[in-house]
Amino acid sequence: MTEAKSGLFRRWAIDVSPLRVPAYFRLWLGTGVSMYGFQLTAVAVPVEMFALTRDSLWVGLLGVAALVPLLAFGLYGGALADALDRRRLLIGSSLLTWVATLGFLLHALSGLDSPVMLLVLTVVQSSAFAISSPTRNAIIPRLVPAEQVPAASTLGFTTFQVAGVLGPLTAGLILGAFDLAAALPIAYATDALLFTVAMWATLRLPAIPPAEGAGAAGLRSLIEGFRYLAGAPVLLLSFAVDIVAMVIAMPRALFPEVSEDRFGGGAAVGWLFAAISIGSMIGGLTSGWINRVRRQGFALVCAVVAWGVLVALAGMAHSLWLMVVLLAFAGAADLVSAVFRQSILLVYAPDSMRGRLQGVMTVVVAGGPRLGDLRAGAMAAAWGVSVSWIGGGVAAAVLAVVLALAFPVLVRYRPPAPGAAPEQISSPA
Image (cartoon, rainbow, N blue to C red; front, side, top):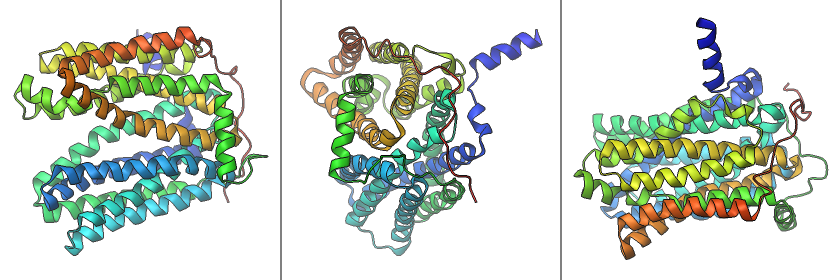
């Protein structure tokens, strides 16, 4: 019985085998700790902005300040990741992120109370993230064997979701325990302190020089990346189904209205906002089976279809806990789709293109949910919340099936046979 339970646990529990690679373990640890700290700042900045302006429009401008540099530098950051030593580039972009966090801290301590300064610091922070994110992801296949890339991707996404749940809860505790003048510096200082773990992990990485024939970063490099992507239907379709899932089915912008109308407001809105991340976190912790899936393209499409169907069912629920449970299952499906999409990109693309394609991935992942918020809000204003929420989920599921049937190359995709070794890199000094 004990052996049976042990075997069942190994089949379903998250695969942590990539953590046996010391360089990857340090990168994973540093990223996870820093993402937890980043969530404190992500909550504190809009709270501070609203406290200064008493105007939600200024809070909304923070989203614009984050999105614009992400779209611009996400692509160029990927080109830099292909042309330069990725370790050095990650160090530089991480230092810029650290400077932005310290800027938030100094602004809170100084009493300057400038909404414009908060926007400027958000632009700096987002620009640094747009460079560091594709660089960090492009490093992974240089650290672990190809067959462990799905497990490494799962670990990364799951850790991000854990941070997405625990970070805001911690920020709420800090904001509840102290007055705002003290709480904001505490949140920013904690983020800056935790970021030292990420810097330590980055400094301990081995040198990761560009692949042979990568070329210099620039407009020509970006065009080459798009030209490669245009000739890689598997990658194009993996991006397309993610855009379908996020833009057409994301119901996040409807949570405040649904919370108020169906559940009387209050704590209900918090549960709705947390539900998808909770499901993604649980999905990641029970993801041991993912690394054994060979038909990754088919699994990706199935996960997107499940996401759409579950979102639609959640939109029909008039019980808060039923809605939270259904959204949590949708979050688990989203985690699965994200892991397979990332794994396909990292294994399918040549190393000389990974940075640029990760830049495209950053733009897609960051822009999709924000466009989804706009879509959901506009449809709700025109036809009502139910049509926006339920119709979006159904439409996403149907479109994912249509794409899969019209372009079966994604459904047929399988990764290379196990046994491929990671590319050679220099040893740390």
